[in-house]
Length: 355
Image 1 (cartoon, rainbow, N blue to C red):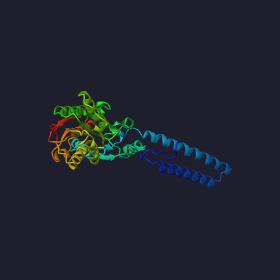
Image 2: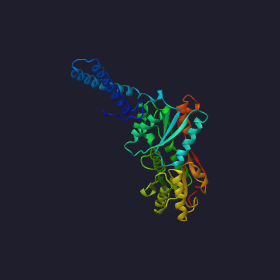
Image 3: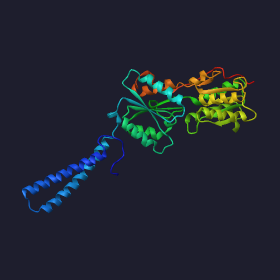
Image 4: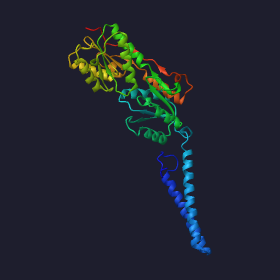
């Protein structure tokens, strides 16, 4: 047991408690010694030694009692929490985080609840300890957890241990319905490939999302499953790694367009990377969609604003965020009931039959 256990700022801090305990017993010893000297008791040295033993035992007992009571104070945050909803994320897609925030605000508008956003580093070995301290300090009513950290079962267990409500967002069934909102990414990407094949495309490239993201995995698996179902070859040159950012999409598209025979269509695992693919094609003089079809995922504002407007998968992230927040603040409402939110294909002008 450490002298000053690092368990947040619950109640009186260990340092203040220890100084107070030492001060009390020092004052007690001095007061009793002064009384003994005034009254003139015999065997003053022997009595002083006894008083020191009593004081030391008293300090130890009082300190142990403080630690025991402090552990009781670590009981569920639900007994002493604020009207704050936390949003935990380590997601490089800023638009996803923004859209999720808007959905949460839709749910808590005109209520006493407020939103606190907390970025974390999923690669840090201290991530769980940092989140524990954050939950204790803010005394949150509950937390909403974005991918990829939503896929961390230890984080969900930490929330349960601390009595803090939580809802995880993901591309697969990560938890019980009351703690989950999920999309059907794999199924939708299969639908994208079906759509492209129906138009006549056979050489289709994939710009993958970052490794470690369940969404990237689900979208990749959906792509491969559909290609294999149609009997289409997926050579290594048809797969390019991205990280959900524009520059990675630009770089990955250049890799795909450099291979021969050249792909006639590209599916990018999010809109930002798809926009990077647009620029790579334009730099090479490849016309979209006449010479190259491009499909994104998210239906973010960039998809509608880029030229030509981008065909993409509409991910109902704002609706998912609203439902996730309501699962915490109004679990009995009808809008809090759904856990699965099907996406849809939004067709615009970035896809055509292969030239």
